[in-house]
Length: 100
Image (cartoon, rainbow, N blue to C red; front, side):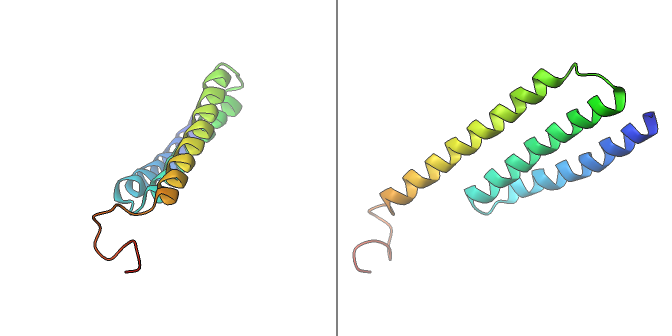
């Protein structure tokens, strides 16, 4: 059982490192938001795999809190991006805005 758990941790660790690279490199806020959602999903999968392999439900409340944070974070980012798109470009941006 321990070997299986270490294999799961290693695979999800590699996936988490690649996800953090995507968060750092971007290039847009939406790319970073999707990568953050993927990272939270990976954390949830590790917690779920740990519960299945070790036959316990001790981390279930943590799993639920991580899921709630992911949902609320995604909604907040979506609202921020939608509000920014509605307001349009800044007044001083050359080449953007009124008829240019």
